[in-house]
Length: 286
Ligand code: NAP
Image 1 (cartoon, rainbow, N blue to C red):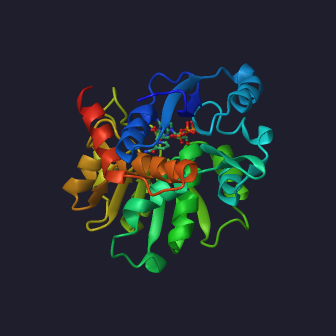
Image 2: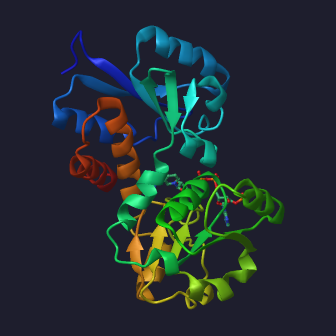
């Protein structure tokens, strides 16, 4: 119940109506019986600075950050975690003794479903499709796992080279970049293959970043991880399962990045299962 003492959390983005975060966080808050509410906060890019001052004025306790603010908000914050600096994006802002502190929980979210797998990461190679914002969290996650080599595949040689250079000295595993045509040679080496492109996302669920000819090169027994969570499974994950790979979709990352943010705001363990169920319930209604 919202009362006169209820504290405010929220998510900023533009647009924000598509966000599933309010569903997931309010389910968690209700389960924990905490006196908080989590609101969608549409903020246009030209009003970001003004919005931040408003949040200060009304005592907002913390907020999630989504497109298009993840980079733009960084110079406006008082403190930015190392992981957010490495990724170059903030997805969670909380209050600390330094003021507004920004971090990025996507790495924790990405890594979470991989931690329980009995894989010798130090002997494993990761192949990441795409070199956009989410790929940066995936690279940081693969580095945290301690993989032997990270290969990033993209379609724009200039962007790929800039991506490679941005990681020099920032991570331990060697990182090499490749164009799409290199896939037949790369896929058989991929112990972990991640789709960080939007290809195959609803409503274009018949698409996949891999052609069926390319998919024939997938390594049986390896892990295929799609950051997309609608549809479930994606065409990419169906191709991977047909080749005997273990499939992980983006729902776990979404839940776990949210859980890590909630823990920062509330200072208590997040009810991950409640959050997962609230999202599944919401997604099956579409
Ligand atoms: P982004 O910054 O726009 O990057 C997208 C990347 O995909 C870019 O490298 C882009 O290449 C590439 N790409 C786009 N269309 C392509 C195509 N037709 N063929 C080949 N490559 C293509 O987007 P993002 O923020 O990284 O998000 C990527 C995906 O991850 C989205 O589906 C998003 O929903 C998902 N995601 C999920 C979670 C989660 O919690 N599960 C979190 C974050 C993101 P160019 O640069 O050449 O255009």
